[in-house]
Length: 233
Image 1: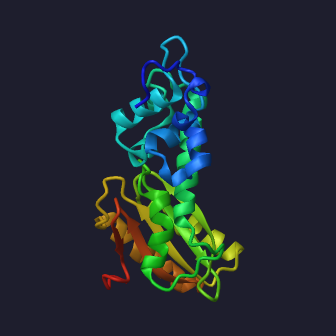
Image 2: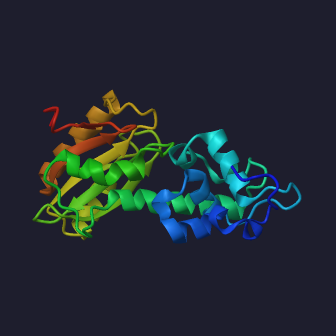
């Protein structure tokens, strides 16, 4: 924690105590969560004599970690004194960069061999979303992901997840196969009756259309459920 004798403007601190200078000198991996966040925030609150690091430490203390911050809305972040819309947007953008990097395996093309390949790619992107998101993942003939398309947002029902909306993107992209994936904000990936009914309904539709469904995967909090792995399709 910075010595309170320091002025709240970080540029006046001793060089080794400034987050940016420490990063350049020692590397990003040597900085604490609060120091990294302070770089993102850039400035503190002048009237309250709080530096960016003070503000960052307050956020870490209140919310615990970046994973928890990821679940917060812009409005919720702005509820912290000193965090306006600009700073809230900076925080959300920085966290999203980290999530997207975690979902990448160093190769721009993701090849699907098992359910774990899909999960490794999508857990960082979907685990902290507060509402249910249903996606279709489109694959080519070599089981490489072409793209994913968000079909619905909100609790899954057969009326929301309609076969027409699910298969239209696959037809347009000439996908060879597809995978369904959605999240459970509760953290428990166990399928509901609606999840099971929707899966069976869509598989029947896929047989008519001629685009094979490889799996339906439900993402929870660090856990997942695969209909194929559990021999439910």
